[in-house]
Structure formats: structure tokens, C-alpha cells
Image (spheres, rainbow, N blue to C red):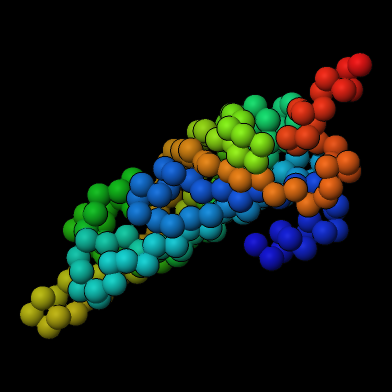
Amino acid sequence: MLLLLVVASHVSAQELTISNNLVYDATLTPNIRLDIGLSPHWTMGLTTGFRHWPRGNLTQKKWRHLMLSPEVRYWADTLQTRHFFGINAMYSHFNAGYTDMVIYKGVKDERRQGDLVGVGVFYGYSWHLGRRWTLEALAGVAVGYAWYDRFVINKQEDDWDPIGDGKSVFALPQLGLNIVYHIPLKSKEKRRYGITAIENTNHFNQ
């Protein structure tokens, strides 16, 4: 997040947005995305998600993880307006067990702890809700690679027994419903794109 702010100061970014993915929230994972405008059609952002529960070491069913996902978007009209296309990378450290999830196939009867990396593409659309608020919907697909250690629970000794390690390739859908708040980094007179560009469309056409 700090890196994005540094980049913003060097490229004279016009606007900063902070958003939350409501679909990701549905998995009980707090998350936030920071995005900066690079030009009239390009933005760069970073999404983070962190789920640190259940905390119990011997809790069988769990999905604890940290996720980082940088991305670049191209806006067909102007920043934060209507159609956009993007590409993103992702990294996650996870501790998942005894749950049936697409991204962690095979963990229904064991626990896996490790890391994954991936890359994805997506398309989305943005609606204006107010002067500083927009709503985004996006859908895409990602592919990646995971490596991990495998464990099964030993209830007699109240511990986990290692049963080896593993690697896997995965593909999964990307879905988002983001509520976005816009923070201008320059005065209204100096901002030339984003929400202000829409507000001044009639002025430019005169």
C-alpha cells in the first residue's frame, strides 16, 4: 500500500480509490483494495485479504490465509467509469483443512499448509452512486500453482501428523462486487480525468 502511494507521488496521480470486495467478505475475509490513476485510461492497484481464524490448532475445518493481489486495469472510457479490463497476479500463504474448496482440492480429509501464486484476467463495469462513490462488478479467471505440506489430525496425541508434501495446479473463477470510495489527490481545477471528466463533459463540448 505504501509503495502505491510512493508511485502516486512520482506519476502525479490524479485520484486514489479505496474499495472493499463484498464477495470476498462473504467468505468472512476482511479485505481492502487501494488503486491509483496512472493516466486517463490506466490504473494500478493492490488487494489484500487476511483471514486469521479459526485460531485453534486442532480445529479441523479451517481456511486461514493471507492474500496479496497487484493488478493493472485499462478503462475503455475514462478512469473509474463504465467498462474496464484487467490483469492481476496473486500470492497467498494458506492453512486449509477438512473443507471442500476448488482452490484446495483434496483437503476434505487432511490439512494443507503452504503457498500459492497465480495470474488472472478479468472484465468489469463501474456504476456511479454519488460524487465520491461507485459500485464495480467484475468476473474473470485465474490459473496458478501451489506447494504445501500435508497433515492429518492425531486426536490421541492432540497434534497433527505430517504425511508428506505436495504440489498442484489450479484454475478458478474471479468474482468481485466492490464498493469504491474516491479520494482526489489534486484540486478540482487540476483534475482532468476520472469523475471530474464526466462532470465537465458538457463544458468541453461547448
